[in-house]
Amino acid sequence: MRIDLHTHSTASDGTDTPAELVRNAAAAGLDVVALTDHDSTRGHAEATAALPAGLTLVTGAELSCRLDGVGLHMLAYLFDPDEPELARERELVRDDRVPRARAMVGKLQELGVAIEWDRVARIAGDGSVGRPHIASALMELGVVESVSDAFTSDWLADDGRAYVEKHELDPFDAIRLVKAAGGVTVFAHPGAAKRGETVPESALAKLAAAGLDGIEVDHMDHDGPTRARLRGLAAELGLLTTGSSDYHGSRKTVQLGEFTTDPEIYGEITRRATGAFPVPGAGGSPRP
Image 1 (spheres, rainbow, N blue to C red):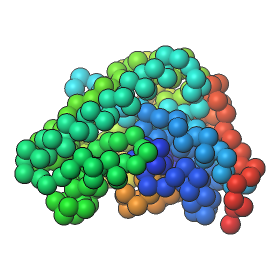
Image 2: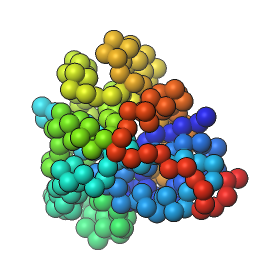
Image 3: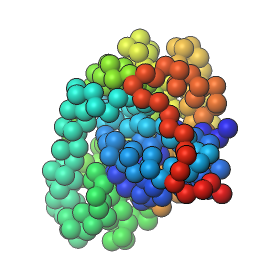
Image 4: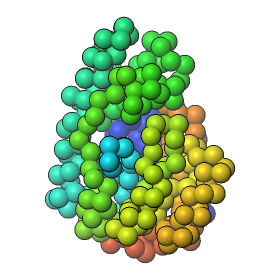
């Protein structure tokens, strides 16, 4: 089985619609794909309706969190999307996205960048606007060569000149809320230092004690030594280890299935979940 547990669609900051994403996942030879848009479950219905036979969909979201001033992302799988407290927190994060993005555009203008809000809004479309959309606008303007190049201290990284904070969950609250909604939590790309400051690895023990289920180890932003170190920490703390592409369509170079999760780990995730269950493909476009 080929299992990719971290992807994004146009419901947040990817470039594939949810329907395109599941069709592309099947074409890439995946057996299981998770749709984990930022703080949103809006793409799940479309992905489910288009799900090709032979492909299983894991519903989820990537929750925006902050610990001691450092941003981190928490992957939440197979939770009940209608659980009111978690739904309310996701809504608070989403509602803060437009004012925050406008403020970052304002900062960029103060730095002499000829960027307009209309350009960012066009790129975001119906998705939840975020830094990748602003990064794409900077790329269009020739300010940076790639989206990744915008996530530096010069521009949009957490310590960047144009960075603006947003409403984010405490990760301990996120774990509690996802658990209460029957879901499973995995710390996304915890060692992605090139994105900015990361949560100290000493915090992993506290998160594990609070009920964290796993950490994403095999990821494009982790080099070999980082993966080995994280795998060792996971073993010490009894955490599951996942691998995922963090696919964003054409916004990033990584491809679907470039990193995958062991089937036994996937089985354990589904065993622990009670809020929702994987959706087997029975319709949509036929699998190639």
